[in-house]
Amino acid sequence: MIKEFHVATLDEFYQALGMIERADRQASGTNTISRYWFRAQSYNHYNLLPSLYREKFYEQNADQTYSQMNLKEDYRYQHLKARAFHSVHSNPQYQSEWQEIYQHHFGHTRLMDWSESARIALLFALEAFIDTRADRELQYKRQHVTPCIWMVNPYELNKKVYNYFCKYFSDDMRNYFAKFYRGRPDLDKLCDELKKHPELYFDAADDDLEIRGIVSLCAIEDYRKTLGTDVDAAVGRYEMNPFYYLALKMYSDALPYFVQDWRKPFLPPMAVLHPYHSERIRIQRGAFTMFPNYIVTDKAKKYYQSRNIDIRAMDQQTYIEDCLRVIYILNPNEVARELLQSGARRSDLYPEIQVYADIIETKKYYY
Image (cartoon, rainbow, N blue to C red; front, side):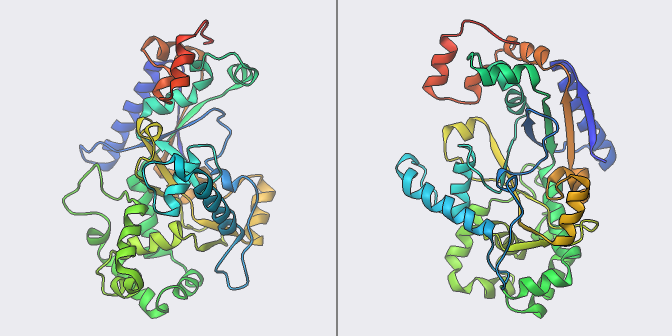
């Protein structure tokens, strides 16, 4: 089960963070501080599911090489790049980078926003009280929000992804993936190499706590671009990290991934870093989980429909539930008041001039 915590004050929120950190150290038997990312939810019944998955289940072609999800992403990428290129000064090169930009402007993607800062996440969760504008939507939220803060351990999450490729990459999925690589024997050899040497391809022996296990798909795209058509051969010679290659194909390229048996581990989302493409993303200390291109089989759909849950959501995947924590905020008005007293303002999230003007013109707080 996912560990839950309930808080009613700002002090209790930080106490809960301390309890989680101490419990993790005790469980690991080390003095290591676990690294967490944080995600705000205004309503605690929302699943951890990215916006592009909230619409429907997706179908794929007969060759299982392209899906409706790919088409939706392609259209969004093409139109955003065509119409907003002049507004982006950081020179994004890859589709996954444009997805990050689109995500931070409320577009639909396979990405889910997280922050490396617990305080930033708390501001998002209580934004209806921090935002001093008096419109009807905010007034409704102030009366009805049931906020919570989700926490994910990005290292442990990506370790699950790595172990999936080593241990749980089923025969059906290997046969499917082999079509895009160099055949089943070479793919089996690659997965065996990952299983034998995690210290080489995932978890460096020098234990760099701040960076280990967390990847940037955009940077890995550069490796692939440099290698060009020789990328498969380079992976076969282990000149390119095979874990990076598998991650690129399943997450960045979004090859269809089939969820067939919900009772067994299936490929989870991956914790990824992108370059900061705006000042807003930088001050929010933005990070992401990227979901695979899930294709849910009819059998799995029936399970979902009979229980009214979405098995694609992070909080419904039993394989990764030990990577997650959740803090429920029982008294959002009080926590918002304490945040404002501590100097928090909406400009901590959005550094645009209009937000500063709204703060200057504040007539009333609504906590």
